[in-house]
Image (cartoon, rainbow, N blue to C red; front, side):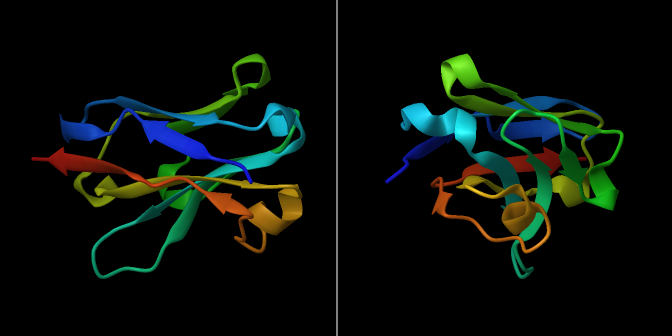
Amino acid sequence: QVQLVESGGGLVQAGGSLRLSCVASERTFSTYAMGWFRQAPGKERELVAAMSWNGGTTYYVGSVKGRFTISRDNAKNTVYLQMNSLKLEDTAVYYCAVNSNYVSIAILKKADYWGQGTQVTVSS
């Protein structure tokens, strides 16, 4: 069982930045592919970004390319999502997730474990 704890969400004005963090309890964190999903009210959950276990492969949904950056620090069991130039439509609950297989999370949008979510609200 992998426990994931997100932090860093909050209220920010459009054009601003936030950095989300997700700390994993599992010491084998470095072997997992990581992803950030989000779900806005009335919408389906979508994969925002994903990264392979060694950071060598990444995925971004088109709407965040060039604005968001996923990164990881395996020594700290932590994955980050740097969000710049935030837009109103980025408002959502953001979830950290892990999968033992990168293709499963990046292509199939499946996760083995989920965090509890952190709210990001972008205001005008």
